[in-house]
Length: 143
Ligand SMILES: CC(C)(COP(=O)(O)OP(=O)(O)OC[C@H]1O[C@@H](n2cnc3c(N)ncnc32)[C@H](O)[C@@H]1OP(=O)(O)O)[C@@H](O)C(=O)NCCC(=O)NCCS
Image (cartoon, rainbow, N blue to C red; front, top):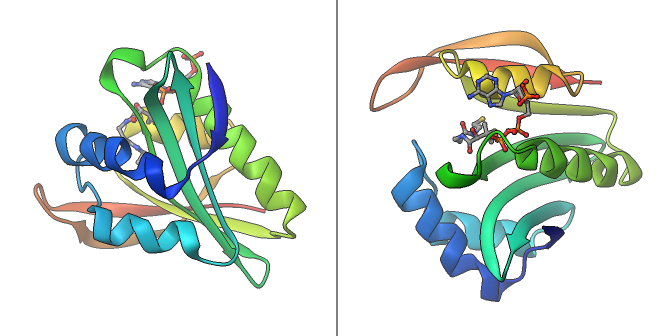
């Protein structure tokens, strides 16, 4: 498995995973501008030429945000999410990020545990932030 930067040519498989395997998936129209944005850190995990995971982050004026993190269903609990997050955080640190924020569904215990293992703590709550199903969003931050 390798981790590398996402190019525009990698977007189609990422969008397909977002559409078919993720709750609240982002469209190509939402993801494409992220790749071009200054301060963006977008990485994918690849195995045998197949995209098996990805992370989209951005860093503006020292403040970073994890926008998307996903691993395909068949490859979960193999440490891929962990490696993607670690690789992105390392790059964000180098980029001068002093704080990194993200939002996660309250019920998403697995993701919350993963983030907690990387120093993220709960800092806020957005009531009914998510749709289908409606659910609170937890804001987590790593400093
Ligand atoms: C969340 C997600 C990215 C985790 O990716 P992953 O590759 O399966 O995670 P890892 O194998 O690297 O897990 C690292 C650690 O996180 C925690 N963790 C991850 N998934 C978990 C789960 N389903 N239940 C409990 N703990 C979990 C564990 O502590 C795990 O370590 P362990 O396996 O040694 O116990 C993946 O489940 C996913 O794509 N989910 C759907 C999208 C999503 O929820 N994204 C985050 C939204 S903010």
